[in-house]
Length: 202
Length: 238
View (cartoon, rainbow over the protein chains, first blue to last red):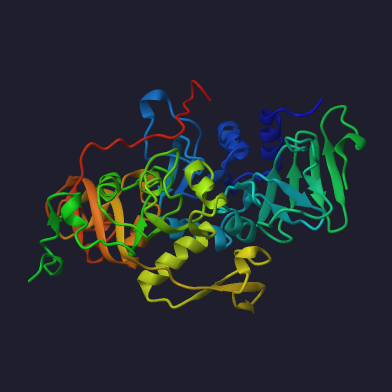
């Protein structure tokens, strides 16, 4: 039984220490804000200039100037602050963010991450990802285990242009939690009834 | 004394007047993250101007067919500097079809290059992008770890949007609408700020000024703001 996206988000939350600062990337990671228990006292940063993201607003509190990195409407909690992009990335590059949780296209055993383009086919752009993987204390990649064409996204060597070299600490997929150690992926946990064989690890 | 040189006479009638002097071949910085905080009126005015070969510096160059995409699809942009293309299929197509020159800049480096231009910093070393194509042909220096040399990014014009301005050009932004705008205001020769509210001198308390007026040359009151939300997600539909 592979994990749902919500179960993946809850797994990531269980890995995050109480009281830490966390940046959430576009896509699946934004689920973490919605699921984060208030008593963990985590401050969620959004690269567009928000520290203290809470979750989703009620209909009457929606504001076009209150969005996350994925341009989705958000709510903020008490103690939140707004700032410009230079300060936001100073926070990131300056080592003030404990965890960066972001999506991926490929991660390899040497802790490399690729998540911003497929040459000739797709240009997403790196956005803040290159700053985040180099500046945050811990980098957790949250992604589907297999691509849409059923290729494993955990590989021996990334084939796509890199976002960062030797930067990934942990990978969480719908099949489990994996730690690249330079030679291979260590299995930290597998989803219920998932076998190592099904993970097609390199 | 020209209008640009009197520090208390910066208010223009509309976007057309405030953009006077913007010509083909010039560079423009535009504030906004996605569609949040974009200078809607200035962008619309540029769609009406007979200019081309622009260099446009903006985090997303518009999104979802809106914002700067209106200028992009008119083929007025020769070169784009941005960090993120996702959500902007028009830009992605022009890149893949090699119809536009572009430089993808990591977002923190993008912000810092613009800030550096405005702050008189001639270059800086950052670990961001080391080991990737971003480092290609750039000087590398090893501090505690390898870093790459990045250079300032300036422009002829900055077009930005704030919630409030006073006649000196002191600006106040709402919530997360600030993003790149304060940096761009510092980095451009002429900064054109459009606002939802023009207020009197002194109405923005000095401790609440987000951008001091010294960085803003022209101001006008915008109109018909759409303030589009790209992805509306509430507690009820999350």
